[in-house]
Image (cartoon, rainbow, N blue to C red; front, side, top):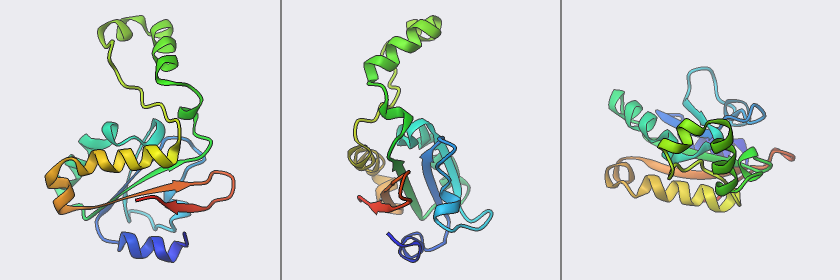
Length: 150
């Protein structure tokens, strides 16, 4: 997807981008954004459940018109299953694991599927779906290609 098409999608007007904390993933660069043009919310995997509080906070401070969720290829969150994350956290942080046995770490099997699921998660909140455009993209870490999934 070209930068011009992305710019049309975002309309450069009060938007937030949810993306992975991977240092190779710099949406402000590959989307051609200027300083301060968008709120960038980053977390492991670019998962929306982790970003929801920030989206609500930003929208409370000033209407957020567009939310773009970006997942990417070769994401570290694809290296382990949810069960493997649980096992590793249990070994490294037993107090946390013991008090949060059902914690969801956000493992990603297929970024093209999880970005759709994450967009659907945000759209499951009626006031978000009614008041915001919510889109999902996958960034190819190797080629730099952006693919719109939702």
